[in-house]
Image 1 (cartoon, rainbow, N blue to C red):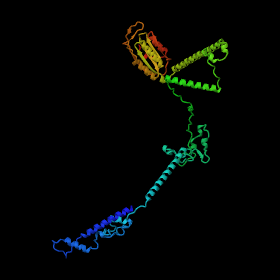
Image 2: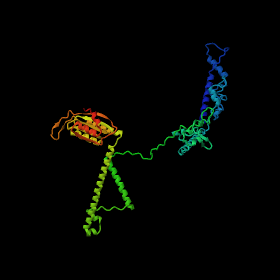
Image 3: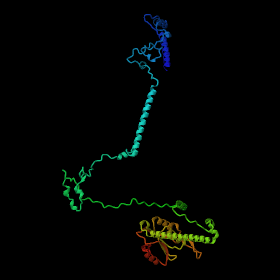
Image 4: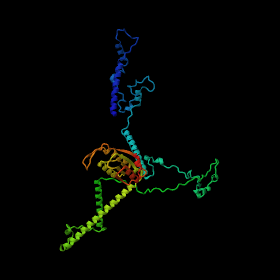
Length: 476
């Protein structure tokens, strides 16, 4: 790089010196005393005069190269020591032009490998700093996991305890001696009489402001301890409703696990091996001995007795399960009938003009049983008016209301099964007379009854303790 730069500078200075010498040859020097006629060309006179005066200096390319340019060290080429640039900057102030300052400073080159070495040192320093920072963070995370330092990510440092005093200010009035932690006698004795603590004791040790230093305990009331609820008691798990296919799958898996457990216990000898299930079809293959061949009749009787025993046990088991199911269902019905919560005592009272259609009677009875409603349906004769009372949950009552008022077609005719004639029901209708919540329910279930007259309807309601419903209908 230095050789190339020195060669370029040499060529520049040589070209500059040649142009300078040529320019000096064309300078015209005119003297007033020796000026000739105007028509005489002055160029020739000036040119000859310049050649005479600058004979030694105006040699053009014949000027020898300065020895500084022959050196490969560019720093030797300076402004004032260069004969080709010595005329520049004459007459200027101290410091010269920017070009002169640049040449006065000279050219400075870095030693090869200095910058790369500095960059490598900076990279190594940054890498060591990052590694040290990473190690510190790892140590802090380990201390956070161990509980030695608070976790800043969840703001645990905000809950650190500060300075904890040896004695809190609210305990200072009751403690006699801080060193022994002894409580004053006034607060340790049993207060059997309310007169033991009077105002004179409170003002025994007053300060200058007249405020008692020991507070009174006459107005302290200790609360009666209340038994806490049993937190260890498990909460009831809601029952999951499964479809028929899922119920079969659960039953099959449960029976499979029980069977595998029984087989495993038999293999370990914990339970006896079950007797073989012998029938007439497999009697010869199960009992492979000489007795069933010599006396097959006795073995046949033995097998028949075993079959009868198994059948008897099977029938008894089925009867027992059937009775248990009936008892369970009866208990469930009793519990439902005795429920007296306000959520199960929503009531709806309807009044209808006639209930001749058997389809409507069947749908009313079927939905009442399915929804587990309580109440009664009474009508005066086959074609007379009647009253319909239902009691149940709010949801079931709302469903039953939509059934009676919207889904059932009261004005739709039907065919009489006895006569085969079409019965006109266009004038029949039903209305909702009252709805609300009862304090108690006297109905044990739901039933439908055909009375002879409206007085009999009133008597039935009186026996059930619900005669007020008859007055709601507005009968006179």
